[in-house]
Length: 107
Length: 123
Figure 1 (cartoon, rainbow over the protein chains, first blue to last red):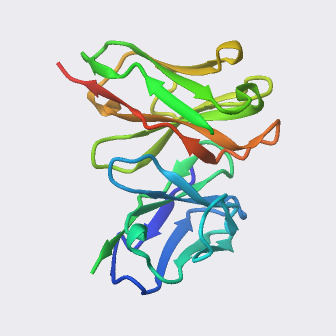
Figure 2 (cartoon, rainbow over the protein chains, first blue to last red):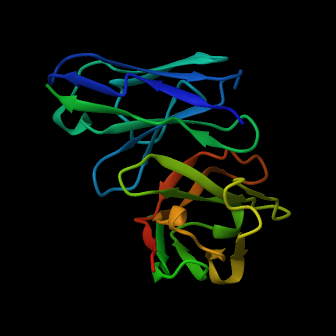
C-alpha cells in the first residue's frame, strides 16, 4: 500500500499570503496524484489531477507540481474561501489512498 | 447538472447490515466508473471501493474486503454499497463520487461527489 504523508498538518496564514502544501508518497506514483479541498460539513472538491492539471472551474491561483514521490499544491494568494482542509490522493495502483490532510487556517 | 444523492445510512448495531444507495442524474451513468469514500467523524478520507464502467471491474480496501459489496444498476442510474458485519470502526459518512473521465480509461479521481450519508454503528 502506498502511504501518502502530508505536511504540515496545519498551516496558519493570512489572506493574501502564499500557501505551499506538501504530499510525499512512500513509493513513486508517477504523476498520478490529485488534490481535494474540503470545507466543514461539505463533500470534498477536486482541485488538481495528474499532479498539475486544474479541475473544471478551479481558479488559477491553485497550482500543482511534482512527480514520483514529492508533490506540492500552491495557492498563490489566499482568498477567504480557501481556508479549508486539503487532501492528496494517488491512483497508482490498488488500493487508492489519501493523505492525512493539511488544514489551512486563518492566522 | 451532475447530481449524486446518497441514502440508506442510519444507526445499526454491531454485526448488523445496511445497504447504501447513490442516485445519479445529469450525466450518462453507465459511462462512468464510480467510487465510495468514507470519513469517520473528525478524521480524514478513506477510499472504500470502486467499480468500473466497463466490465464492472471491482476493488475494495482491505478494511472492508469480504464484508462490503459494491454494485451498480445502470438502468436505474444507481450505485450501491452493501455493508455487512458492521463494527464501530465502520462509523463514518459515506460518499459516492463519479470518476473524472468517462469510458474505459478510468482516472479513479472523484470529480463530482454526493453530500454523503452517515452510518453509525453502536449498541
